[in-house]
Image 1: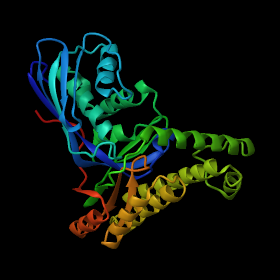
Image 2: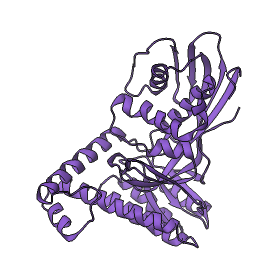
Image 3: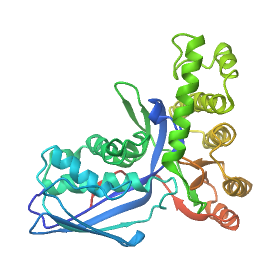
Image 4: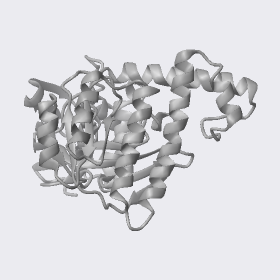
Length: 360
């Protein structure tokens, strides 16, 4: 790390959640993977403490000083929140002229915002010559503080850790957190943006509140019940007595939890069974569609088209209500692309990629 460098470029990847959607903010396990669609931040050092940041992909430009606490002017003012957090922690900041470019679909469930905050925190640490620039876990935690904690939003840490670490990761959000980099036997995926806008924070807040309320009601009948309790006949009986939203969301959360553990076992079985992996993706999607109810008619059409074209499995990606899906297509991804595009999806052929990195 060279504080005297006048030029700097970093990048970080988007992610797909393989199994474990809507689990991280409950402290449950996920399996996710970084993909080769990335956010890149390049910059030239200034002689003052002003940040001038050009974001041509969204038609915006920001300018603010890093020598004082910066007021937020919008809901998710992530570039400013990262600078504020670093200032509070005593990081010495200088100004930069920056350009932010990306290939990740925006607001589509592929973690464009988390990739941005991971890259931005990496950039600030590298610029200051801070040792944490070389520690992905530290960058992930800073990303979570920047995007979620600072704005008191309901999300978890899956996206930040996946983008920072790269590869395929199995994360058990216990206390303490258990993080496993998985051997990566995965081949080609087709990611498709439905082009339907989604409400990430609204969806997360709705699911989180109903799951916690349902769990509390079950606990009144079964003392000691938690989201880590087995999905026994006794538990199912009490869940079935809940109101409609509490019932379906709590049941879906527990079924997703169990599918995630099945996924962890699959990754640890040799040789890796690509067909079983595809079936696992589709089983996760069934839960997300039928119980969490986060799919849409268009995404269902795209998934059917992908499976009919030979994909081994497919699921919605991210918080849902729109955004992206992905299909596992190791045999003939181009055929899947044609089918998905006919169904209205904007396609990307992707593979698993490395985490946040300095490029210049």
